[in-house]
Length: 180
Image (cartoon, rainbow, N blue to C red; front, side, top):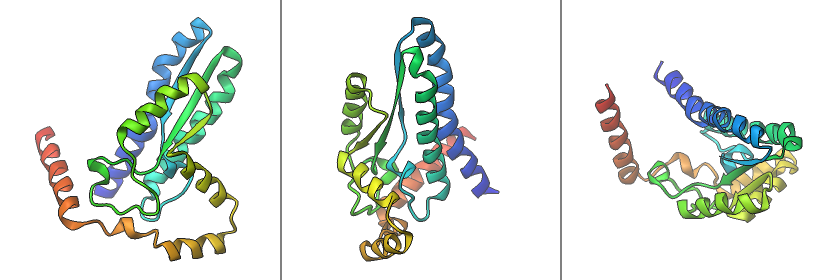
C-alpha cells in the first residue's frame, strides 16, 4: 500500500504537475499566437536507472508529452523544451553515488531554462554531454549496454551513504508528520 501511494505521488508530481502547468499557460499563449513552455524532466526520461522504475516512467512520460505537444503547437507559434538534467545536487540526491553521471547544481538547470527561451531546442541535457551518452545508449545493442552498465557499476545509486541519506529520510518523515 505504501509503495503504491509513493508511486501515485511520483506520477502526480512529476507528470500531472507538468500537465497542469501546461494547461494553465497554453491558452494564453494560443491567444497571443506565441510562447515557450519549458518542462523540467530528467536524463532518467531517456536513460533508465535500475531501482527507479516509477521515477523513470514519470520522466519518460514528461519527455514524450513535451515532444508531442511541441509538434501539436508548432504551427500556433508555441515552442516547448524538455530540460534533461542528470542527478541534481540537492537533498533528494543526498548520499547517492551516481557516477559516472555527474551531479549538477540547480543553477546550471536554471541557466538551461533561461537559455532555452532563445534557442528553443526540443531537448536540452544538463550537462550537455550526458544527452549524447543517452542517445548513444538508445542505439546500443542491449547485451553491450548491459555489460557496460556492469563494468561501471551503475547500480551504485541503490546503495546510498547511510548517514547523509538517513538525514534526508528523517526530514521527509518530519515533513510528513506535520501534514498529518
